[in-house]
Amino acid sequence: MRIKSIFTHSAQAIAEGALISLLVVGLVAGTAFAAKGGGAAGGTTTSATLSTDCNSCALGTVANFSGSGFDGSQPRGMVAVTTGGSTAWAGININPDGTTSFVWYMNPSGAYTFQIYQTSHKRQQLKATLTGVTVQ
Image 1 (tube, helix red, strand yellow):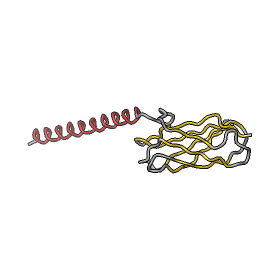
Image 2 (cartoon, rainbow, N blue to C red):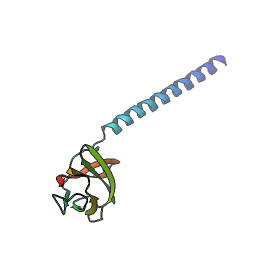
Image 3 (cartoon, helix red, strand yellow):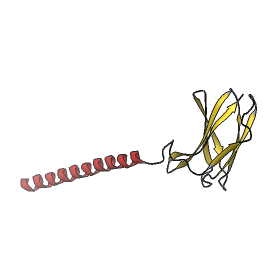
């Protein structure tokens, strides 16, 4: 009887160790695949375009921006506006036809860069960039 219980206990311990090993391998592999990702923020720019109705823009005015070529199946995007070493973020709408439009209050003076991001595979991907917009 004693030999049978030792054998049973040993088999259960081995099975438990194997299960824990599989869980650890699964977690490590899953983390490695998630880290590899692709298209993280700052990723490849697509053929989407972005333009403004002013350049150079007057200080304290509201500039109109429009763009096309975005993923219409993703109704929200983010615009990152950089000037003078600071970046401000705002949410924007993307229309089903892949177009967008938004306004931005142009203050302070300087050179601006506008970048539009959309989510793809749970990551933000850079879709369009407009650089050299000046405010005087």
